[in-house]
Amino acid sequence: MGKNDVDRVGTPTQRLWRRTIVNPTTGCYEWQGATNDWGYGTIWVDGKDVFVHRFAHELFVGPIPAGHEIDHDCRTRNCWRPDHLEAVTRRDNILRGEGAGAINARRTHCAQGHEFTPANTYIWRGYRHCKACNAKRQRARRAARKKAA
Image 1: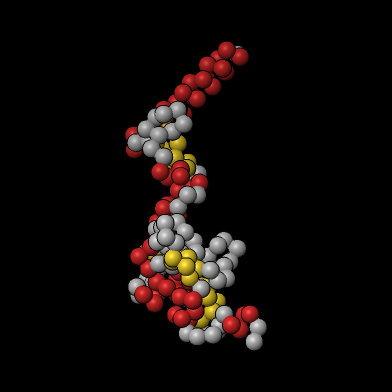
Image 2 (image 1 turned 135 degrees about the vertical axis):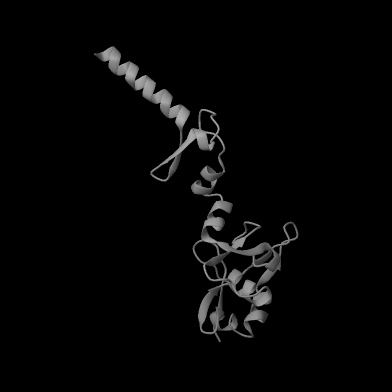
């Protein structure tokens, strides 16, 4: 029996617990088995590899609603602790993260310190822009053109 065969002995739930350690600091149930390139745990269930966090959510919480994915509230990708997982939309999952889109969405002021309010903000090519900064740039361009003429 090869190493991979040993990993498939027992029910998926037994294998889930066998390949898990509890992190004493965070309380995360950290998967110690196979992971993909992004650090998400995978487990063999019914003849295919599935994500450990999705399997655990469906096993202990319930079905994942259509159009939803599982977010790790703890930000630990190999964690499958049910109370650390939540079914959310892709948009919510992205905005909760640490990527550039999430960071920019949380910004409340432009680089010059002007607040992003409905009156001071416009959207161009999918990005928020500051009307006060834009007006300042336009004045500087007009002044430069006038001086050059």
